[in-house]
Figure (spheres, rainbow, N blue to C red):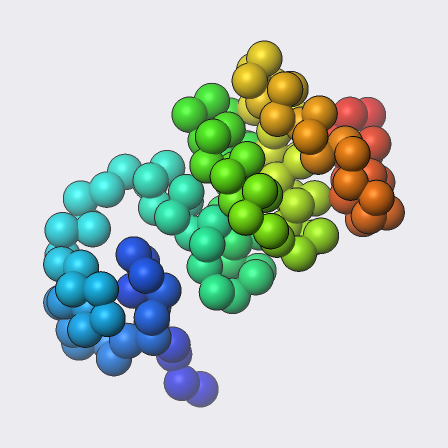
Length: 123
């Protein structure tokens, strides 16, 4: 099985041994100094949908109110309904007034997947 590596800044595919991204010139060793939450926020834009969804889920579990802005931004850029459902659950779990305000935008979605995720998370 081949392992795929991605630049955590621009998400270009990389060989495993690079320390500088040829696409965006990010110093990959400098990104090692970011906090776990910063890595999770960056992963909201990962090209593998399951990774982005997992990042949203973990941000919600961690309850970090500073993640509300990036979660809302990711939603506003357009995302598949499963990622939006994870974003909705994360906002409910975070529970701050800012998270509740952001959630009101997601409640307007017509997707059954998103609406059901919101209903289930509130139980």
